[in-house]
Amino acid sequence: MSGTGQPWPSADAGGHDPAELIRLFDDEFAPENTRLVRGDEEPLYLPADDTCAYHRVVFAHGFFASALHEIAHWCIAGPRRRALVDYGYWYEGDGRDAVTQAEFERVEARPQALEWAFSMAADAPFRVSVDNLDGDPGDPDGFRRAVRDALAVYLRDGLPPRARRFAIRLQDRYGGHIELPADLPRL
Image 1 (tube, one colour):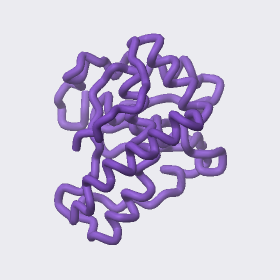
Image 2 (cartoon, one colour):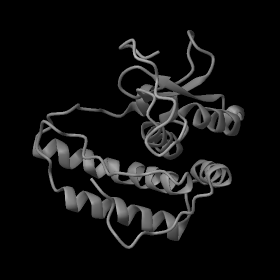
Image 3 (cartoon, one colour):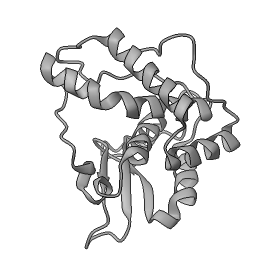
Image 4 (cartoon, rainbow, N blue to C red):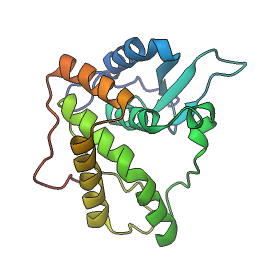
């Protein structure tokens, strides 16, 4: 059950079950003492501590796409960042001004590119998120291009090692294929 008393979605609009994604992630990354966790509120990364013996990649509201996005952040973070709550990054919620939105877009292009790769591997829908409905939208088309460009670099140079392992796991399960689309991603 979510914090609202509503049952978790058993699958997204594309028929993808978040519980299955949790099993895939947990099986693949058990040696790294990291688990994917369905959260009630905002996504968050929590390193192991005195209250919990394993690291937690917490995704929002049981959404498959949120899980893929949070996994992307985890796959990019190095050992030092994975020792910090939310990888030690700042996050300013909805309502960002133009300067703050530009910084958000600068740091989000790579994780969203990996999320897109994971979505293709899982044969799941993907949308770029400017994540600022009540603030300055910045340059959505520019951000879409930045995400596509980051994906092109990953496809040319290779995915980070953990991302590659997980993408293969997703492809094996869902039969998707990762390739550079001709079109920009949807918002």
